[in-house]
Image 1 (cartoon, one colour):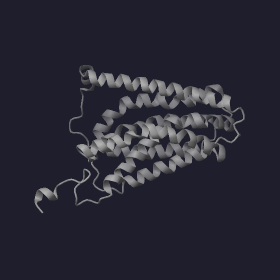
Image 2 (tube, helix red, strand yellow; image 1 turned 90 degrees about the vertical axis):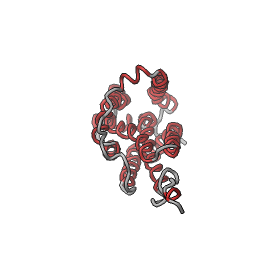
Image 3 (cartoon, helix red, strand yellow; image 1 turned 180 degrees about the vertical axis):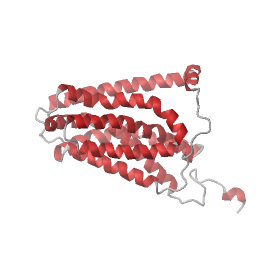
Length: 261
């Protein structure tokens, strides 16, 4: 066997590395991104149950729906430079740790104010995952394997709503809305623990010269501008649906103790 054959990558990794490393990393990043999608959708299906149990006021209900996206918007503008200076892997793991604590705190929230506070904290934590997931996939799998992994992870955008909406309503009705947060907390903790099992992950070093020309590149590149506009419109439509979804559920099911199949 020649030296060229020995260095030939398999699934974006060298043959002398464990064969489960690529699918293992895919499972971790897919799970992390799925948590991001599920977190966006978690409140609407369980809101009638939360409102009943915690006796939420109209103001608290509004704050519960808007606190996460409002905080996430601010965090997304700030987390990029911080990630450049600390390393994407560190931010990814820190995000998973904070997400675990946010879900656990939400499950144990004694009142509406505490739950709203947890949603604000989640708006700080989840951008750490959303911004680093695809970067880790590309960093650890250059070329076609990285693009394949990113494409598979992107499937969470479609898979997440199919899982979260019925999952949230089912467990909130059959068990408790607190159980929904508890299951998500365990899932985040498992993803965090699994990230330490894969050795030699890239992304732990900071950039020597962090990019300072982001605004200029956005103005100069028409394709990027078009993509950003498309994503903005998609997000606007998604959050509009999320905002009216609890009202639809409340009207359709006046008695929230009724079993939802």
